[in-house]
Amino acid sequence: MTSWKAAALAAILVCAPLAACDKPAEHASQSSTVQIGGPFQLVDMNGRPVTEKTLLGKPTAIFFGFTYCPEVCPTTMAEMTAWLKALGPEADKLNVVFVSVDPERDTPEQLKLYLSNFDRRIQGFTGTPENIAKTAKAYRVYYQKVATDGGGYTLDHSSATYLFDAQGRFVEPIGYGGPPERGLGQLRALLKG
Image (cartoon, rainbow, N blue to C red; front, side, top):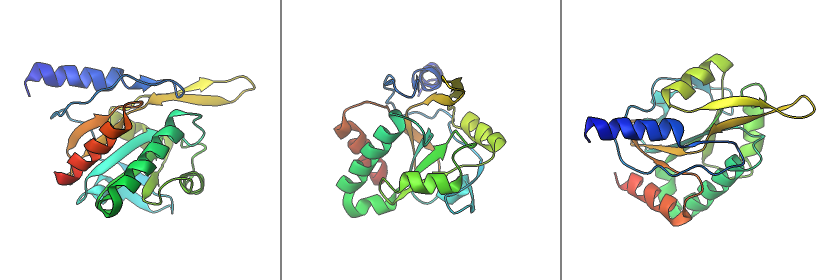
């Protein structure tokens, strides 16, 4: 990939997938060598430490969201659940991770409760606000609190699912709101390497 294409894709990934939690984002689907991902220190749904090395050895689909999200997150997890079912036993060869960008509310216990509504193979990661911020920066994920009436808050956040190969190299995103058969095809291609 030429440097201008890499720069253009980086701009798309940084800007295009941004969406309010209830709005679909534009699609960005293109292989690249753009640096996305990196070291992180989080905990899983059982409170055990996890790092980027935890995911090595299997291809990974990783999504950043929050459990109080009204639309984008449950829709994405429902689609992922359908894709994993369609993949059958091949789905066991894939890491699927939901990383919370709302560490104040998304404790490991809350993640476990939320993800119990979806495929059991979807893992939930959370952490301290500082570690979530560092992880989001490494993955070029945007998120920001938005105050709501009554003193609460919601979060605007990136809406793409990022795909990585078994060595932890970024492959491509699955854009939110795209045709379901496209996302399934991307996961099948990821598994084939």
